[in-house]
Image (cartoon, rainbow, N blue to C red; front, side, top):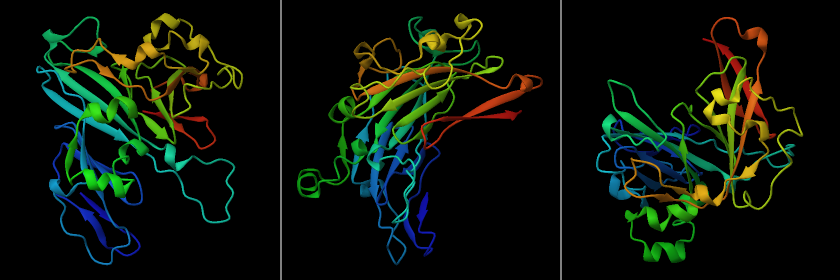
Amino acid sequence: MMVINWKTGVVVWHMHGSSDQHFKIVSSTHLVLIDGRDLTLRLYAFDSSASVDSPLATAEDCLYVLGLPACADWVSDKYINSAFEPVAKHALGEKPLFTHDTASALLVLQIYLMFPGPEADSESECSSCDDGPASEQFLLVIPVRTLLQFSTDAETTAARLPQASVISWEDWGPRGTRMLALRPYARAPTVLGARVALKDWSEYPGACVVTLYEVHELADRSSPASATSGDQLHQPPDASAVDHVDAAANAGAVPVARDDDWLRDTVTWKNAVHTTYPCRKTTRFIPLDESKNEGSWSSVVRLTHDGLLLIVQCRN
């Protein structure tokens, strides 16, 4: 794993990693190493203005380690997919019509936890197949300010937090993140600013089902106009055929209810998971060009800076 200043060619950070690890650069001075096997996040600092290659980093060189919730004993395998989109920087004097607050940027982790099929609980949102393990998947949304909270105040934090200290989930996660249980057919998320879009894997003829999460400090204090006010929301021909859009007909953006702060009906976390960072959810059933229904087509969802969803239709 390596970070290079492309202007100078200097290696500003590098480290030997494993297939279970990958990293995201979350600021101009910090990156987070995501370990899918240990379920940890290691924060590293780097100097992008360095004039010589940096020494090889080790696990002990990180600023601190953020732990994730403990898994149940029967979890047999774990995998983490991540998404992060740096907020665009503009030159002095530029006046874009719209831009995201860099302080509201989100790191999104899509966590897959596998376990032997017989352990499945009928109450949980898990998937399984006849000849393989069952699984649950979760979306953990982490504001970058939460990731960096133990490093931003050098005078107080550095004095009381030794390098490579392990910070347990209970000491940072419940208040500073939002974890959501996902249906088995949820695709990889796309993120921009304080918003996360998640496309349903269950293809419905002529339509695209999208869930949009807004995760920021004011998400539970204000609500925009109904989703139907800007563009017509279409009810699917048979809404009951798509489990994840049972509320699609009333898809105004609403705060996620406080009852949803808790994830209790899962079989893969050792204990119930409680997160309280404000979150607002909108589900949309978006009709696509019916002329492209012939043959095999798929849709790709992307967020844009003006707050719209960009739906790209591709032939498989």
